[in-house]
Image (cartoon, rainbow, N blue to C red):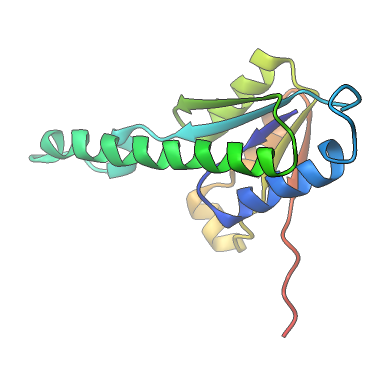
Length: 154
């Protein structure tokens, strides 16, 4: 099972949900899946999003920030897994667009399930930004589980 992880509450919720439903109830030898957590680190150029004078000087700073974010994501993922007594986990940081990184991780690990959190974008925002979960649902060579956080009722 490959689980997508970024620095959002949505992916944190998805990881916790997966651990609670597919890993924590089982003994370490009885778990139905091997767990691989993948964080797609954007390239500095894609994070900046524009090209022009002065961009070259900014790229090392952006890359440093992206590496710090990736380290936080990895630490948080390991902490969440440890809290559920799931220690047999592979955590990867792969640079690139999340859509491609996740589909490639599915192939590399021969995953039978890809898990992504849902950001809950509306139709317009999803059309502009693109949906990682939508892309993966159509292109990953395995089943894709989209974990949604329950809506809070007021």
